[in-house]
Image 1 (cartoon, rainbow, N blue to C red):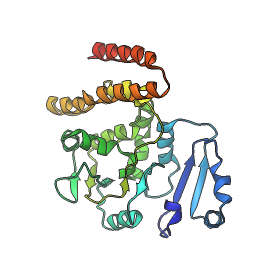
Image 2: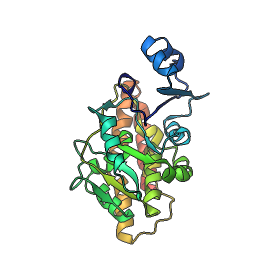
Image 3: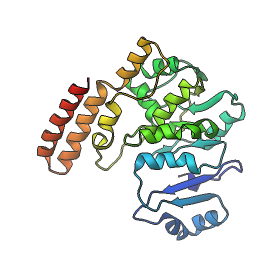
Length: 270
């Protein structure tokens, strides 16, 4: 946990409590060590008045961030050793034209360290290498954002708040504005498979798979690559997640109905 580690002077932690059943500000104050850190200003807790959902809460992080750079860290991923020090070390010499930093995972590595993505075409080419490379940009905890580059794009994120990928759509707009990203081979987190049932399809499936209403200044080949990122593996994931979600609730008749409806909608949209 970040709260268990000494925090450098040039970093701060903001925890967004999305109207959880537990009031985490009160919860943290019950622990003497965390209570002291809280009063010393080592971390801040912001509690939403209502649960605004995963994606809207993700976007809220951009609104409340007070630093020049933001590490958007999911609450269920394990930190790699010295993760903060790794990030701060990279930021020491970061170029002014770099607005996004992506770290790597076991399944997705750049061709070499300090891999620069300086165009929309190059971004799509990297994503198109494999499903794992596409997923590595979807992975929330891998990314470090320059707030001044992304706050103006937050409306794009809210346009796609019905999906689990509003941050990805902001990245697309980021690259369409000729902004640059750097990819490092280092890891800062380890993905942890959720232990609870969830359904990507019920929240995000149709929204992710649908045509994107962003005006692309790209050629036909690049645009086709972009569309292909979402098909067909997205359809398979939607159906698999939907199946296990329904099975966990003992409602496979619901799966039979929703899966047929989903396939019908996708067939018509294509």
